[in-house]
Length: 487
Image (tube, rainbow, N blue to C red; front, side, top):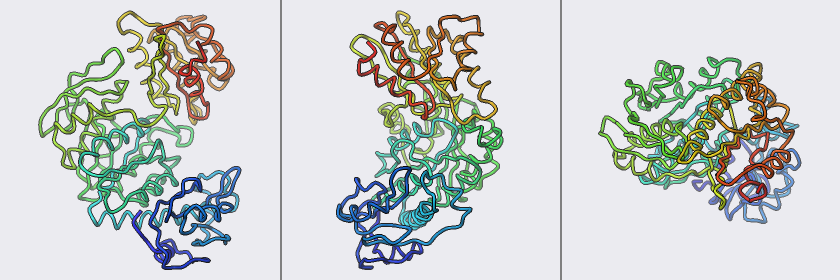
């Protein structure tokens, strides 16, 4: 973060300095985990399910924090922030926030982030925002890697994309940062607009409009309206990067004052992928075509769906001054950064484990199954396993969506489907009904049962996809396989 005195921080967030020297300066990072505090940092006291950050205030200061951002008095140097409205408290998804103190601290953190973003933007920082129903994290990681050669770039770890992760990431930027890449998520209307208010982007990219969180939004049109809040926030001199292959996204061009750049395989796209091929590990190669020229790209990431992600990263980098060859080289050299997202490991016995278990929705599940099918068809055909769990937050569409995925596994000729958990039963039923698949599909009750089955039946050379929504915890299956526990 940029250096600020406690008096300045208090003025920015509307708080009061408590048991501290107002002239003391915050020079370190802003942290909500007292174990991560560094000298000169600011500790953010948030409530949780089991602990309350206010109880760790003194410990954080002992570890080097200059002060604590708190909602009530603590026995340590602090900035005490005022309460917020009950409506604001309800809008914040923070577990353990029984008295609204977490919402108050988060509101203050957002105000601090906005101040820092405005100051750094005035000094030349470019804020890039990205949203979509799926692929946000992988694309954010690609953008950060492609922009890194152009200057210091900050991006959040993993999927740190909500009202806590967003301002926390903004406050990692300092006077040396040239690009700030932010991932924006939403649980309902207005959420993306609020995140944009915390750090107004100059470049905004929308990847797709799918069915993730359909149970919370209602319809894809409702999802599109919310995702489009990103392009609505862009200034007239901004840039909206839109997926030309998704009609709901392409239609957002009418909702922004910014200049629009279309990406995709469609002829209408200014940044396109031509002649796409996949190797035996489902890694895509293509010709990158842009107004500035063409260049070949060979991705190291697994799955054809990464082509669209790469095009978004390419368009943003080109707008920020990269050459076509620089973009192609960066994309070709890009690596997977965030864990449990198409994380591919091959064991000594030739078993390949694809851990894509961080999260799941119907679109990402279909992409992952197609990737598995491609990998299984390579060379001497390999036996394919799909170990799948529940896709959450689909509302009334849940049964149909799970049934569709089970049927798709059969149509893609996946050899074995292991459905984990009663909530995903419709996947097993769909597979069993699609061509009377029989014993090729099995429903098991939990992770331990899935691991036991694989331990008994997995053979050298098999390829296994593990995928489900985060709450299912199916990455434990993948980690057991990689550790060799299922041999």
